[in-house]
Amino acid sequence: MTSAPGFTVRVRPAIAADDRVRLAADVRSPGLGERELWYEIDAARADWLTDRADPFVVATLLLAMIERRDLTVTGAPVDAVLLRNLAEFQRIWHAWFGYPMVEVRAETSAPALPAPENVLAFSGGADAAFSAWFHTRGDGRASRPVTAAMMIFGIDIPLTEPDGFARASARSRRLVDDLGLEFVTVATNAWTLPVPVPHYTGMGVAAALHSLGGRFGAGLIPSTAAYEDLVVPLNTSPVSDWLLGAARFDIVHSGALFNRFEKLRLLAPWPEAMAGLRVCLLDPRRDRNCGKCNKCMLTLAAFRIVGVEPACFDRPVTGDELLRWARTLPSTRYYVQEGSYLLEGAADRGLDEPWVRALARRVRTVQVKDAVRAAWPGLATGVADLHRRAARFLATRG
Image (cartoon, rainbow, N blue to C red):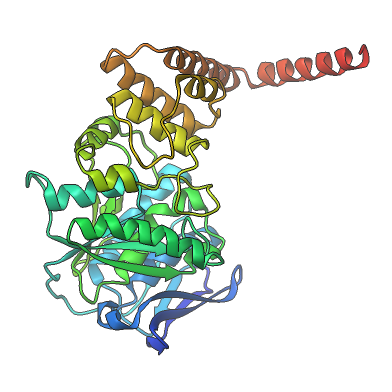
């Protein structure tokens, strides 16, 4: 562990203004300077807010690790079990991503039993909708007493777009209301801090869930991959998410019993989900699915594989559109993994369409290139340079 001082979090009393109440902390470090970190909900639900510093510890731990500075928390106690869990969580993040480990110093709270109710993180996407459905209308296996769904303002929709978030949250509320759950929005500026976004998702969502520890005893994070399909390292997974929990507020990775195709098939009879899922991150209105971006196309391809045409898109996707997309699948690790997963689902269901064959060729091409780069980095660089030289030569020849 590092002994370098200088990363401090001072929790302030909650402050009510107009119809909102804000839970805030002063964060200070040589790298950040002085910042305010806050979580805000409707004033009518002020008693839902936690009186512990747990959300701020979870939200800032990775920043302290990046700066290699021990984290000191004042102004409110931290759950002792959370502190113990975060030590193990750091060991995982150190092994997976190379982040250095730090010490967390804080006053600890007295032991207490968690409240019986659970709250689910709800984005409006397929994984969140499935978790909400499973814990309210499923067959009871491994379900939990979920009574509310929380949507975060400030994660995928920036705080500078309140109108867009209002439209998106209204769409999510329709799904949540149909299941008989309470719906709450939590605004936070956590994602305006210089966090490494791909590694922060689980921690950021868990921190926002912790802010509601005044009422709830557990927060659920919807899964993205099934147990059978886990590939680590992952920024949110059943391996590490539970270590973001505390004695009085558990963090649960929800839904990994089912793969994506099973989730979509089980959601298909739910009309509100088929009409109201929001998976798009690029549509400027924030309450629609553009039907063109990579996230939309991944979802449309998965629905195609299970034989369902969802009404949440303006129109059905065509085979030609899927074919064009498959040929240009991004070569990043995430999309290659997603493409491979789609191919497995198509093979399992005997689907052999032109876009599936094109996707297979695209995935194989990227995998071969990656293997060459890994085995012979100099050769791969030389080939790329040769291609550039040839292109410049041909351009000069008209």
